Amino acid sequence: MYRRILAVGDIHGEWKKFLSLYRQVQFAPQQDLLIFLGDYIDRGLRSMEALDWMYTHHEKKTSSCCAETTSR
Image (cartoon, rainbow, N blue to C red; front, top):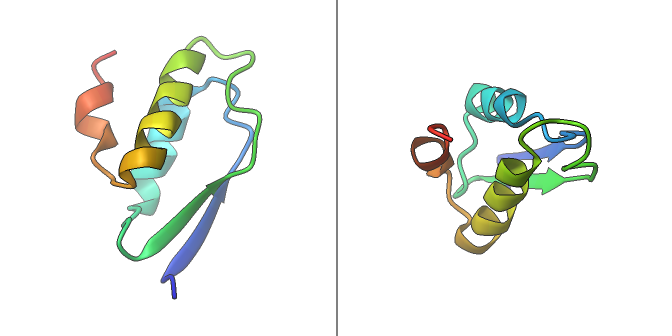
């Protein structure tokens, strides 16, 4: 059973906004489920970062994203 189920959609390549939200909710992968609903990579300037993070963390299922990707 999950403590929380978090749904995120319509990122549209707005990587910094996504990271801000991710930090605010304090996602705990051992207790929470994070679901992405779509519209990840159009319009925004940082679509690749958003897609890369989702691909990497789908495999790892960890919350260690922020230290490794915010310098981009």
